[in-house]
Amino acid sequence: EGVEVSSAHTYDFVIAANRLPVDRVVTTDGSVEWQRSPGGLVTAMESVMRGRDAAWVGWSGQADEAPEPFKDDNLLLVPVELSADEVTSYYEGQSNDSLWPIYHDVIVPATFRRSWAAAYEKVNRRFAQRVADVAAEGATVWIHDYQLQLVPRMLRVLRPDVRIGWFNHIPFPPVELFAQLPVRHSLLMGLLGADFLGFQRPADAENFLRACRRLLMAKTKGDVVEVPDSDRRVRAAAVPISIDAADLAALAESEPVKARAAEIREQLGNPRTILLGVDRLDYTKGIRHRLKAFDELLRDGRLDPTDTMLVQVASPSRERVDAYRELRHQVERTVGNINGAYSPIGSTAVTYMHRSFPREEMAALYRAADVMLVTPLRDGMNLVAKEYVTCHDGPGALVLSEFTGAAGELKQAFRCNPHDIEALKNTILTAIDTPADERSRRMRALRKQVAKNDVQAWATKYLDALRLAPEKPTA
Ligand code: ADP
Ligand code: F6P
Image (tube, rainbow, N blue to C red; front, side, top):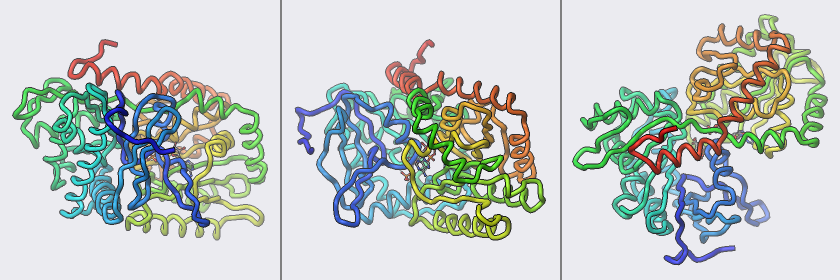
């Protein structure tokens, strides 16, 4: 049901993210459905925002579509319109073909276009205006991710009364890479419009501080930046994100999910070992490296396709960006090749699924998997790793790339460098061969780590830091 947004309807707590927590989808029969949006940001923020008296400003996922603001429980969802042209230039172009590659170590080359940068600025201004419209006097505003880096400064000009935080869900690159961006100056100045900037890892915050020193000639003292030509000071620090661990653990322990996990193993033919990968189909996730390692282990006879299989769930992502289209072709060709070479009659070496599943099914898959393969070449955090250890309460094993934010916290994982295919193969075998009691012990420690540092603790820590910035919270 739509409600009018007027000055009478303003909120003390407003968040802005590129996407709303739900995507507007028009089905084949023409009816409208709202489906949960993809990605880790929504997984985390949906739990944090559930039931709050707050507003969430974001895109509906559809071009030329800006439905009226509507309520979801107590939360007001405020859609921001993007034209078809802006989806191409601001979202697919500047956000995901310029910034995304630079922020992820240039795993694929970045493309820079002046028209994309202009669209990014225009759309960021629209977000800032929408936030300004719904924020109450003195409100707390929390802006999310790399798509909205100009919003803090734009909002400060519109609304000097509000408290502004920004959190980066992805890595922040070393200054040597960041410096390539033609828009580097406006991005840094845009971010410095905030009171507090949150990052996944200490190294990300350090990269940001270094960029301010080198490119803006700004002074920094510890984790505080002195904003050039102003008396403002902005704090930049790591606050690693997490998941709603208690909620997910309860789901994973529910009878239907337990039964489904057993059924999945049965349907796969009760193999000795199930390896699992779960990712958006993104070149940052190291899916090709994982498939190569698995292929070679089968080729060398070190894994037996009659008792070991890989399940790869890859959710569709950014399909009109060339690098993503190319990745999909490569992955699907490789899966076909592996299955052609090794699948026994009646089963498949790699079960590949290119679609999204409900939470219950994901929890069951995690429970069913003996070894979880999380092998990104670069990842801000990787919530899949945290979800796996939360759902699986037996002798599982997490193979985890050292290039994820999660590797900074999940110390009992089987750590790997996915670029080193030989080492990756050995780590996968070690994970499979480690005795069950040792695997259970490691999984218990991992589970405890995530339960203690869950998304509620993260939000509390972030909002405390925002309230006190540029001073540090004492705890
Ligand atoms: P990113 O934010 O880069 O997508 P994360 O690992 O942090 O990566 O978060 C991904 C989120 O998307 C997780 O909550 C995961 O459970 C969910 N997810 C990934 N693939 C699927 C899928 N095929 N179906 C449903 N949920 C998925
Ligand atoms: O944090 C990574 C992120 O880009 C989020 O901003 C986003 O919600 C998610 O991954 C999924 O990507 P997209 O919104 O481009 O489908």
